[in-house]
Image (cartoon, rainbow, N blue to C red):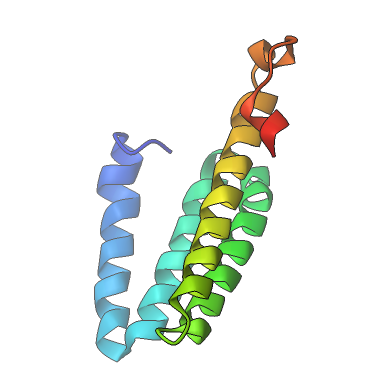
Length: 116
């Protein structure tokens, strides 16, 4: 499903927005759970295996965000280090999948995946 497809604009998006609005009246957590489920459904629409590729990133980012939240304002240096680790992880994750799936990455030139 593409963002500019009729299935997205007239099917998926209205259902997700309505569900978010209705569940948002019940509380923040149900609305966020709905958005999470809708996002995973969206990623799985074209190829269900994509959810398995993105799941580790979601879990690691969630863990890093919780660690930053626990650290709080007391130790800004540690919070900055956690944030930096998260950014580096995400760039390496993106670089790996962007370069490993293209045939150009199979050449002898170094790629972003070689840095991580």
